[in-house]
Image (spheres, rainbow, N blue to C red):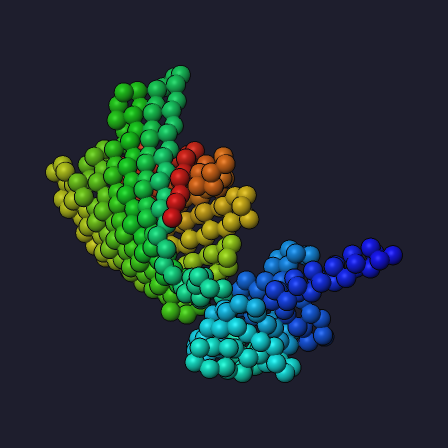
Length: 344
């Protein structure tokens, strides 16, 4: 009997010691949840527990909380403090900051993070470089011999409401030992949203195509962007703008220049970590002659593969139509299989 009593007392002592070393969240209905508060962000308190793993608690359901170590706290007015948090009266806490204790309402806390971590708002608003390298290689044998390769390298400096990007790509095709495509193209652009829906963009492209006798094609444009869908897994952006395009030819053809309009639709959708769908449609007519226009379409699905999450394989279709090109080459359709490597 004494042995059982001693075990019970020891269990109570251990439980009490663990509770004393834990953070505590006190809900408005009186529940006391113990664990480690890892983060407070976007009206949620994230608590790591030994009994239920990581749980999220709505901040408007929390009356008070306390921490056993100093944490960083940012209030809804932008002020920050660092120190242990103590539970006081209902719906309030006391922060033991170096400059003196502060008693505030629990609802006034906009964010809290552990020592050594960063303010989640700073992390969320930080611009991050993202890179993509891809290559398409296709071949055909039989009645005709065809070999095609397209390589692309892109970099983006992306923030929550703006993105700057640059890219360069090269395409080479040979059919029956005759070169049918030899094109290099590059460009840069910037897009920024000043509201949830409205924004603006500017972009420029340079292209050289030996098989089409294009010595240099230059396009500069800009206009308004409309963010029709803006979710973590899906975006839909419509662009309307104007620009100027000039094309110089390596043969006797005269250079062609003129003002253009631009309409574009960009859509992306990600289904968890399973696949990603990316589509783009661009329509560029001349201002003086709407019968002279170019349409570009690209849609594909990207599937991650292998143990390294940086690798993906893409399948898709590309169309390019130019109304003033030769009849046998006015519409070009390419079905591609693409190997993609992405990194930050």
